[in-house]
Length: 225
Image (cartoon, rainbow, N blue to C red; front, side, top):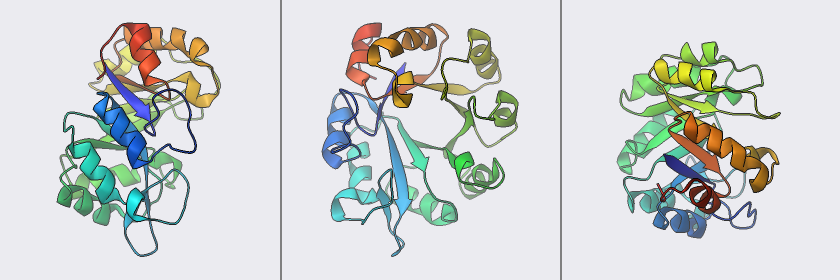
């Protein structure tokens, strides 16, 4: 199972250092995948940050892509924060040599019609991996499965556990990779999240995204992935 370090965090939320090159490098060197955020600056350059900010050499996409390439087997979940830059982004990911390492997700949160950006990305690059959202916020499995370009599912639980073994089994049966969002990303303690980690693992998810990857790996008795 793949463990994604949310914004590069290893031991819980760390707003001062999350998404920094040091945090990303530490998570990758520990053997974990990465969940991180991508934005485009006014000058047209891409940078890594959850919120809009002044781009700098340290948060440039090229700097982070070099870190990802240091472990080419590490999965990178790339949270797309803006629409309208699809062609430039695909070109940049290919130029930097990481297009085959990432999957793009969360486009439904910023686009007028779910699936539009996924279709544009797929038209630009038939190999880039794309995820569709399933959650308890009016994002049902049927809608995600209708996004033909998405071979991956990002399974989110904002208001508490709602997905079941049957939910996940149906998505897997449809040929999808499923990544579960750990409850700690929505305020649960790691102790509260442990039961959900066990559920997700027993249901055969592809991976889990958490702020506590070291603890998750220890709790589930798995190596870094």
